[in-house]
Amino acid sequence: MGTEVQGGAGYKNLSASGLVKAVPGVLCGIFVASASASPTVKVWDSTAGSGVVLVNTFTPIAGAWYPLPFQTSVGIYVTIGGTVDLTVSY
Image 1 (cartoon, rainbow, N blue to C red):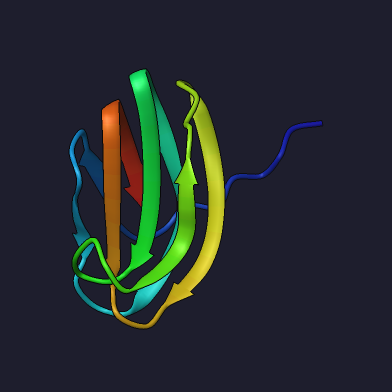
Image 2: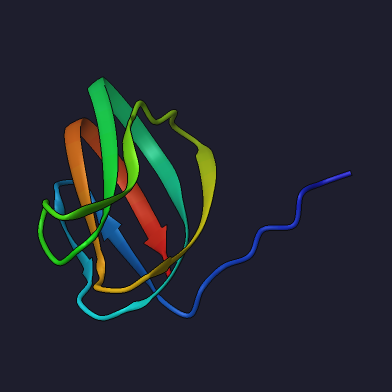
């Protein structure tokens, strides 16, 4: 039996650290299309790479969906290390 995947109303593709959403809302999850060269990802409830950490640094796996059902109070910012191509669903 498969796992139901809940998506959001919006999305943003990133291959470098960046702002996903500049207002409060809901983070649904992250799909990692590719990851190599010591990849890392960190997710913030912020509009910059500082402040409240939603998900601390982890090593993503290519082809994986990471469900991250979090409510944010500021925004969503993702810090990427190494080589990663991902899409954030919010």
